Amino acid sequence: MHATRPLSEDDADRPLGRAVRRGLLCRCPKCGEGKLLHRYLKVRDACPSCGEAFHHQRADDGPAWLTLLIVGHLMAPALHIGYVRYEPEPLVLFAVLSSACLVLSLVLLPRLKGMMVAFQWSRRMHGFSRP
Image (tube, rainbow, N blue to C red; front, side, top):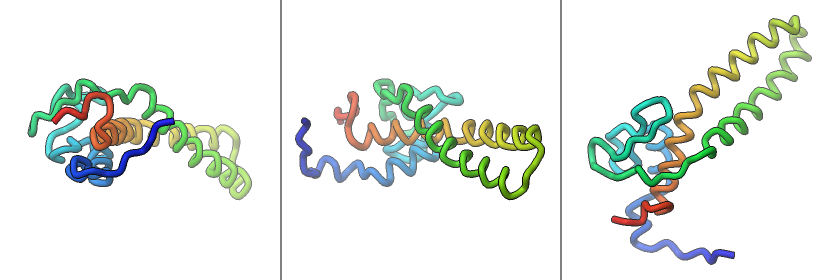
């Protein structure tokens, strides 16, 4: 087990809430100005505005898992409600819900990646501990 340490003054300069909000907007968690991603899911090596290094982030499969979790929990009730209440043709229901799944996944994936990188930065994980 890892012991949790109390928040120190070093943690005060990296508030989690602000960092996560900036990450969800795909902005630098430190300054909020520079873009965090330079392609759809490619994280920049450093912020173009403040120079904060991001090359050591380890988001890996986390954003994909979170996207799957969120989209699945939104679309499962939508499928049930749509089928029970409106009784559409199966092909119509498939077309609508698969399109919704695709769009929602494409919108969420880069934002959740930004959020995970910002979380790592805020908690000083994976090499973000250096000043």
